[in-house]
Length: 314
Image (cartoon, rainbow, N blue to C red):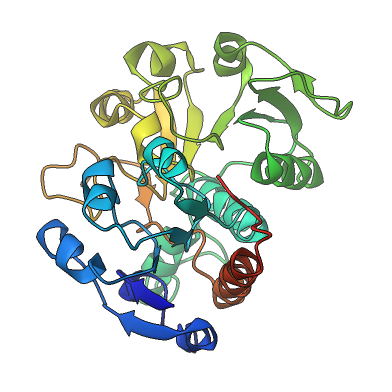
């Protein structure tokens, strides 16, 4: 089997590589692949393994040998899965590998907003504590989480883990999901009610036709004045201009985002330079332990596909 990796640069590093794929056949690895390079690179491929490379119906139609698409990811909105299913192409993702890492990063963003550690560290580095007349100084407001309400939009594995962590901080938990939730530790409410009641709104749902742009100007206006918005899910869930307006006006205390509508970030991104907005470059999933786990599932997906018993098929 000839396997092509189209965007290895997005997953390797820190001791993580794709050498394990050689177990399954000939491997050709590209650091990154731009759209015009994709079809030539897949012409002789039996399988492709990718992260964010878009593989459309037009690509698959002119790559007749291609019968397997493996993802270095949970999300698969970059693959035309309907065309793949209709033409005998197996598509396998990696669910659940990043649950702990993304939940942890959700709280890293939240604590960056409430505890302002990076800002206080900057003041100490600038000598403010050396010059301080008292043992402590606190001109930058701090916020306690205990007693506040966490609103979780999407209650899959990551949403549940975020709920666990929120309760450990002494927070109440509200949830909005597509289906009824049997968990008695949380209160399930309509989306609008969650926005109105939550002190923190955290997004943990997939990007699809129903969820795209759901956090628009009307949604941010419904949120409490002084609330916090967190998104470690998908950038397409958010109208970024509306979020910028909510920050500029002071309606929101702050926002923490790990994902944007366009990645990498562009200079004209509405959130570039936004006040009280902590932005990380889509790294919630990228811990070394997390990526090692990811590679293990990618390998097992291929192994099971070759054995005629595919798993994690989408």
